[in-house]
Length: 175
Length: 161
Image (cartoon, rainbow over all chains, first blue to last red; front, side):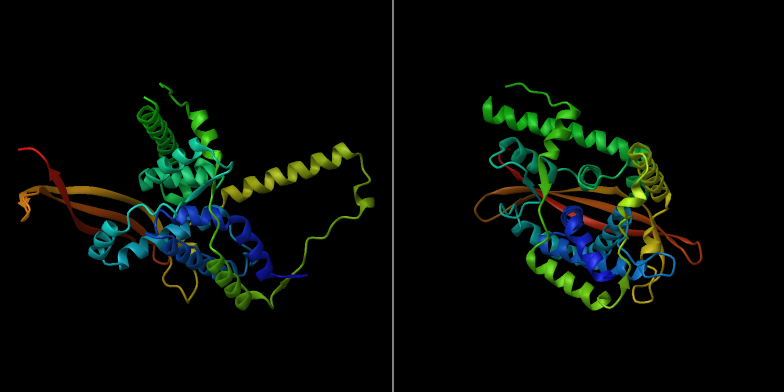
């Protein structure tokens, strides 16, 4: 026998980073995003304790959906004027990155990271769920409340935008 | 240097990035929370089958395991995931399903130039955006449209007249 909390902790160790990456679209700061993840974990814990759900950690689509909803609520309760004011102060914090290159000194990966962070929220969340969440377009569509075709279209459009961003940056740097 | 990235190349480049981990503090905090919630709830560890249970032709055993895994993952994908289900707890709030979300630009106005004491000028533009979301109350079936108008102001520096 093992404790349920241990199973959840193992699951969190495995999935925490991808959940945080998804939550970054909704939290203005890393701390906000981490709070959203924690809030979603708590919500899902209670949800999974229902009679027919076994108590174990949830599937990723449901977890992403819960983070998204928590993020939406966060947006609605915060003062929008404060957000606008603070957005002037909180420009790019070069230490606060969302992604790390797998290989050190991978310059192209660093450029790609910036391009991903600059995608619109709607495109980026699809890329995050597909690339690092490992979800299918059907699962993404369920989590976001859109059709699978829309999910696939957003993903394709995101790849096009990333391609254009990378090309532009390389033209500027190398002529 | 003229390089056009294909979608495959972009996907490969994306896989060369990995999400940063949760910070030490939030990981500890969340683990502590999980311990408080469920350290006294025990569940059975999946039993490892004895070697003798797998004393069947290795190909057949592997095929059975593969098919079971495949069909279990397919059935899991068919489960409908709704945010409303996720919120089913008396500690959390009403059951709602999040359906759609969209942003609509409702109005755009040009407020003219603003010149400060130093002579720098900015062009002030005001945009009214309406964010609309549809949520469904899972208990009553009622669909509610949430509308949140907001006004955004853009200050565009003007360098020439």
